[in-house]
Image 1 (cartoon, rainbow, N blue to C red):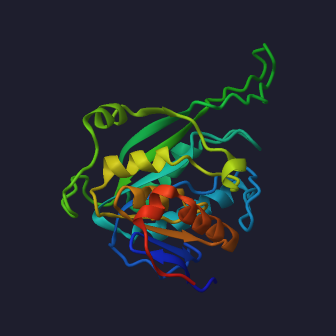
Image 2: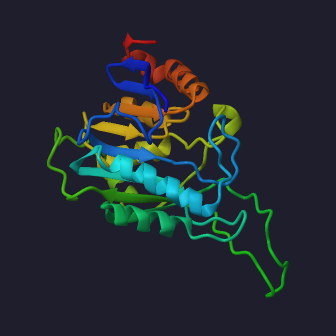
Length: 266
């Protein structure tokens, strides 16, 4: 069990080094929106998380963190889960459907699924039986953002102030989003998502001043997006290396430098 450590704190960002499965650092019913991309179990070389467990073990892990995170949102709180549509490595699996089903079994209510067409994916390496009906692989170059809520969809808590523009609302309520992914080399993390993903989720599904949680904070992208949009970002990350990376990215963001004044740093 990891003892929680406040790795970084200012008036808009709280980064906690802890295990989301056992953490006591998040108050129940305190979160307006969860935006996260959990480990995909596709053998990504994380620093301290095994990403090559069996599919059954992966679904057990998924159930455990989703159950833990169910206590954190308010009754009108939402969750945006960036997850795979399916899995091809090591056998075909309907990952998106299975995770959505587990979430509903736990008690999350289903709202919608956004298809993220990651415009820069062109790395096709697995064709199955080439130009033959014997065993072709069908691989969609998309990911999902599954939108869930706790008890009621209509949001009544918070400031009631939205900062989304007319064009953003029109474009983003179309559930197919097209924007590029993020460079692993540029960020220094094996599975970063681009700032555009949490930015859209936060503006569309939360009010100004709301509290946004990422239980797998990684390189801190959700926290940066939340702070830039005048929300409170809370991140939980088990790995000290990634906590340090997130902290460096917070400090190196020119937009955030103008906004943030550290109030505590350990």
